[in-house]
Image (cartoon, rainbow, N blue to C red):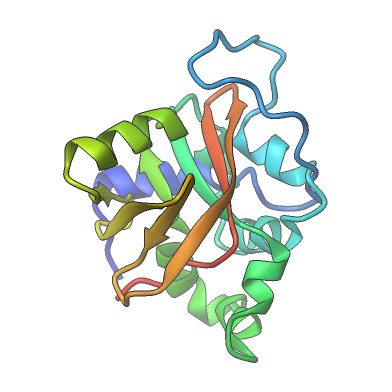
Length: 185
């Protein structure tokens, strides 16, 4: 399976998410200056306690290095509960070494180039009459809409996923925690 060069570079950044557990700390305000001691995307995901499946998947796909690069990146980060909603056997099948390409494609479908805050995303949705299309590093699109004050992301197959925690700033981008997993079409 081949990926655009941009996707492969981003995939390399995802590699540092591998190994360890995750615990989200207090979200920083989007757009504020990031201290050099602030953790990167991978370190933040490892520290949350709710992204263990994502961290394991990033490790299995060898993407931790990519997401540790300067970026910036925006990651829509599914929780362990989100992964548990997938059909039985999906995660274990994706984690098998022979499925590394497919796993990588799923993971980079959750990554966008640049640091996109919730305010920026909301403004784009409003400017585009209620929905905004996002290009992912997987070369596929996501569609963002608002449901009340909640940002809802729809994947290529029409599955809607809510952003449950926005604007977790890191030294190399921003994380938006989601209650679902995007699967490429």
